[in-house]
Amino acid sequence: METNFANPGFWTYFIGSYAYYLPFVLTMVWAPLALFGLSKQKDMTTTKQVIWSLVILVIPVFGPALYLLFVDTEYEKKFKQIAVGGGFGVLILVWVLSLIFHI
Image 1: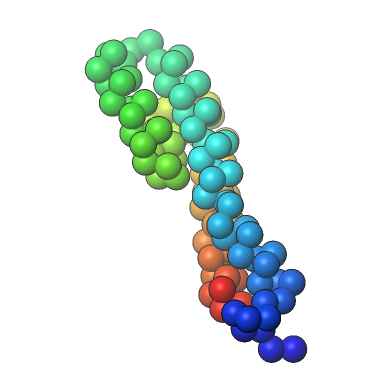
Image 2: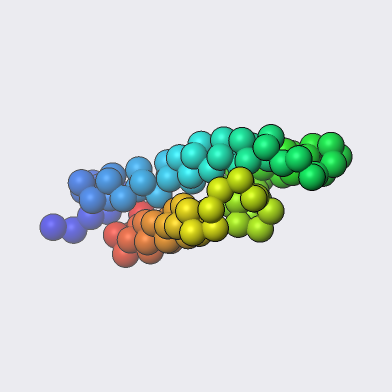
């Protein structure tokens, strides 16, 4: 069965929905984790905390990911690598599948 823009199939809707909503979901998961970890930082100045808060909140997917991977000391390293790496892995997989299904 051929899929086109006038007659999209099930997989087109399914993969398209994931490709559209997944960055929002990743931001909704990573940003609170990053902000919570930032609030627990005792050795960081207030200016740096404000700057990191803005980076986390203004740069949707990459801000929280950068903070969690490179700055955060609240969570274990393996947890952060799995959470961020797994999220980006799924995001790339969904984008590749959306290219395959011509979305």
